[in-house]
Image (cartoon, rainbow, N blue to C red; front, top):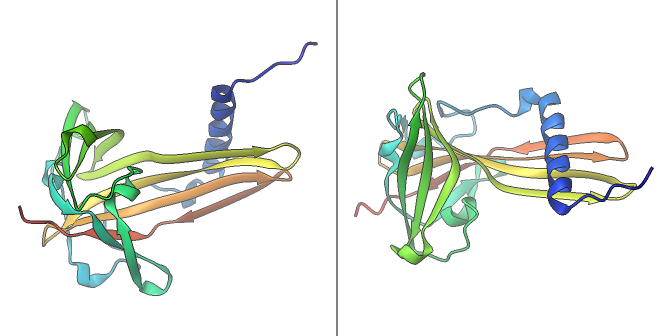
Length: 203
């Protein structure tokens, strides 16, 4: 039987299928964070969270790009909004706008998130994999990476993010960074879900 040559796109799809298969095994670890609510790791001084409305339009505004992310032990460190969204930019501020594509029968919406760094229309990015679920903005598969080493293993990692706003209009996000790998036929799964906060410019 002649050998079958796989293109890079075919390999990517195989890796994605593997990632989804392993993720389904560990489904209890990866959950949809909607509605977004504070948990034990949420910094209480960030304030209560507000629902974003049926199309998540409440999230629209201008935010300071440099924010903070929680780390182990409850401390925080700096992190940019553009890096979370996998956009290369050293912008000072970032404008967010939600464009509704379709409403479903449950009152949730298929949306895109328009990201405008420093008001530069030439740098406008529109994230396609976003949804307004239970008045929480969920953007999935923002970042993906796959790897494979013959006779060793293969796997991949992915980032999702769930957004809300606090009472003082700061942008609050919960990241969902997880990886699924098979190394020497042994499945390995890991997930980190830190909180992030970005102040509004009130402009």
